[in-house]
Length: 325
Image 1 (cartoon, one colour):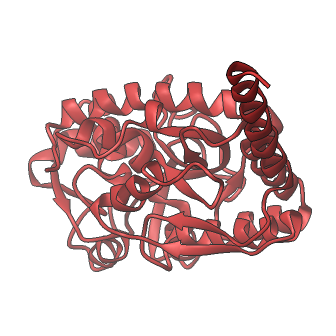
Image 2 (image 1 turned 180 degrees about the horizontal axis):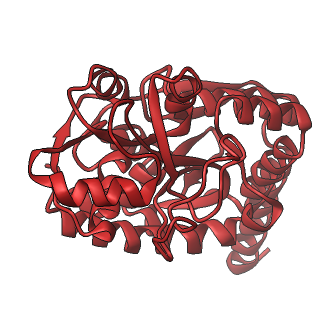
């Protein structure tokens, strides 16, 4: 056998072995990196999906919380990981959109360092106020804010978070300038809203729903284009006069760039199967999370969606004048 022929045969065998390995994936437990602390909305939806994926894939999907850096620490680990299907990351609007502009030197490039797998959940942001704020809908809130913006304050989970920038976008659309109070998480921000120390939040629905239902805070608008199935009676900001307004969180899976297409396709198919399961849908909706429809689940859709989100939130970051080292 000539040297050229030998090289060809070896290359063919290697390619065949890689393809066969991808087709049989997974042959051992897989790690889902959730780049946030346990107990929050992203951890909750990650664990719901991990259980369903384990059943479909026939191997355990182990949730590993890798917090820090606003979600960038865990995301960076997966971006730099071997593209062998051993781990993937649960990304959201913060890690895979806002971070690209918020950080002066982001540790990864979303469009170059990841293989998109699929978008799977929407987490609506909802405008909530202290219960004694004299406004019963969005237009009344805007009128009140215009008259009192110099003495009002809004909170967020942290500077540059979706909860911060969602309100920054809302303030800009309403034409008001209100002092921002950043907290170390959504829970302490909500505690100060309950105590009347701040006036409003733009917060994920899973955190807000129990308090809205308990009458401890007021909900004035869903900040997605359409109503949330978790709060079906609450009109969107767009319905209430802010044409085209949208500010929402979301969850999606990403693998390291270079992961074989067969592995990406298999995880995408398992994700879609989980989302079609009525039990999974109920678990998600019970905690205020909306599963996405079939038309928004493909890797190609996620690739384009992430690019559009980077551009949209990049403008919001610049307008808000926030940065993270």
